[in-house]
Image 1: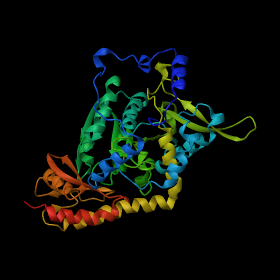
Image 2 (image 1 turned 180 degrees about the horizontal axis):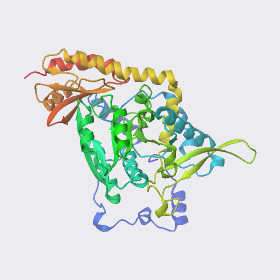
Image 3 (image 1 turned 60 degrees about the vertical axis):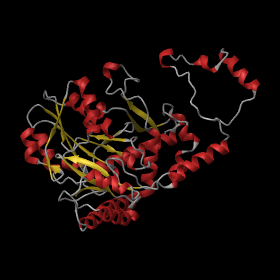
Image 4 (image 1 turned 45 degrees about the horizontal axis):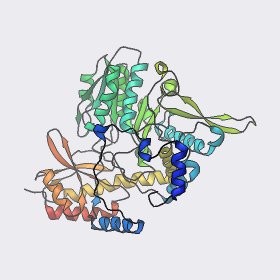
Length: 442
């Protein structure tokens, strides 16, 4: 609160209460990293600061994004903000005291129940940072529960490097080896996967939709291959896609991970909400925490944290994870958004993501110098576009037309990647016009 001033007497009283003469005495900052210079920022009143920021934002380009790449923006209804910003939710950082956090705990239980229904698995938790850490925790779970020795975690070769690097960091402590298997037309190359599998395979991961937006049609075959070699099978997805896809458990998935932050959050360019669900037999191997239902002293339905396996709660040697922070408030927002959508709203949103990208790629494909989609498959939200000119040059030219698309490297080629959701669906015509103007032909 930089503009909420303290009277001098209050200021001195607070310093006296904590036993210091200056607020700087509260911080032990080593000299070698201490900044003693001036920032060169003039002081402004609150109205002046607001006006300066508004002027700065007004001068910014009004760019429409078609980026995707694992971070998807869906319309977040206002009820999500109005409810989640209530003080009883914002101040309940962790729900250790069930007697004063029943409402929050119930919302988290509903969030878990939503994931169970969408994935077809029996157990879901509510405390994962993002999809990459959920995948890393899956690798560690596999190392703990697999009955046969093995250390190889197999990811599709389309896995983004930023996600793979997180899994590799997780793997170091458990002496696991992270490898990739081939894909074709953006989906699993079943024969190529089978050729890479042996008894050392610990975990096989497949995505649907894939990193290129392709809906994976070979999940059952991948699940069978993993089972034949004694490996666990993990499917990477998200709640909106799962609302129209077959539950991964039906294809043999032991674990489902992904980003539940597609609900309740706008595009945050990094922050997410990790989805993690698994079979009931792995109940005591789940990282993070679980909310369960019990009864209070009056035999009324009550909610509580029934399982906490983080090392801050139990002995380190018995802990399943060292995850420390809490995504409960983000999960609360996802639960509110899901309840607002309801089953029909989920399906309507998912259909926008399928028809939107299908229609867009068909229009792009009619333009000279473009081929879309690159992969001959069904797509969800996003797809790759081939260009005769260097993709990076086309993307830069599109920026000048106030539209932003991504550039993706795959098989030593660079492609444009376009993404359609309910947020930008009305602007696809402007994207097509801009692509026609800049041209994809040499």
